[in-house]
Image (cartoon, rainbow, N blue to C red; front, side):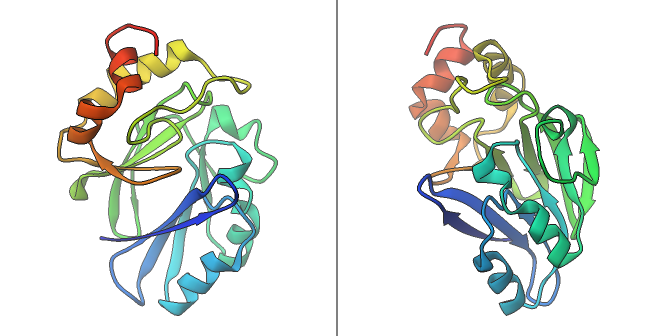
Length: 200
């Protein structure tokens, strides 16, 4: 699996383009901006986009999705609770718990509310890689101060979803650098606190 991260905007939001080989299919996760950098990379590597996956509805993660979908002629996937607040179109509404096969990848879909009501994490489990949006980062968690955010739901996500991931899983977040779950369990004090029923 090849992973190309393109960070844009003042918040350096990560868009991921995932593929196996040049000339094949790809998946785009969280194209937050109307940027030619996404299409330039796809065209340069002669890729065909099978799907756009959105981890949550905040503008820095979804801002370029509709135009990119129209240009690449590929569907947008999003959780139904965040689709209601998304101004673009959603082709496939998710609830969490699905298993998708896209561009040759098998993907488990986890509903991880807290940062937003319909937050999702996408688990490419054959490659021990999870794309977490703004649910969890290397040393902290997503904020819950925005509309629909909830510390209680984020704590639930930490205990019941994230803490079940193996130490060798690499988490690719919506901002900043990737980290293994072993590193997160050792260094992410916010995750440890909410997982253990404490305040961060």
